[in-house]
Length: 240
Image: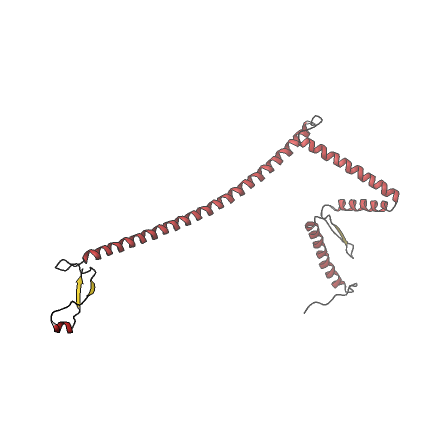
């Protein structure tokens, strides 16, 4: 069964009030810490108990948080006056121009320009910065090369596996071809042996039994014998 809705009002029982304060104080401090970490926010929290004890949390330092708060509060109050607002924005514009000039000068120094006005310590600082930058660039470059080499090795292994599979298929095709040629050769030898073991037979009188035999009816010839004339005789003539 879920918890019921708690009525927000002062807890009369001192023990329950102290327990609730302790629990909710810890939860509030935890949420403030999580907010500063997750959102990169500058958070300052101050809690006074009913007994006068203080509990606080600051993402950086409580002093800097309070100073920043007071400064922004004064600026907000100044913005309420039009004249103060113009002065505020002029100050902000001058500050931004100064920051831009500093950044441009700093970039020229990093590029090796306008170094005549720098002291030995400044030059050493820029040298250290450049060395650290070069070190980071080299590390990133080596990382990219390592990743590319790893990828090329993977592709090479894949191509090698495909090459092995193709060689296996070619060997299989060659074996099948050799077996088919062997079977064809054996069948041809068997046919030749069968033919040689059963030669063609000829008739003793010199006639080939496989020669074509033609039959032709001959016309009846007139006979002197009357009996033969009455009964004509059909004759068969065997021609080679």
